[in-house]
Image: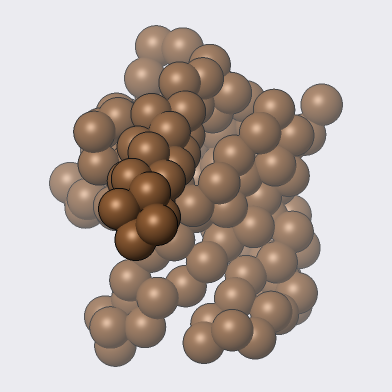
Length: 128
């Protein structure tokens, strides 16, 4: 029985890992609006001035982040084996690693670590 349980855990973790990112690159090409964010398990709405924050990803691997009305352009790439979306700001050459927590055609949850080593989840909604 213990062997069967162990096998099922291994099988289910492999299944989840293999299905997670199959369509991510297709779905991420879109305009994504910030719905809310989460720090230490507490969700917050966008701060004042950030209600229209968004991220735009193109098929040409270009990105644009609009934060508090300020646009930052760059590039993006996705590491399917690690589930990491890397966004590089072209002006400052700043790398932002975003761990993909979940995604669908209409919603995306990404996680980043801030300079204080806090993990922040960003909840995005597709702007269709």
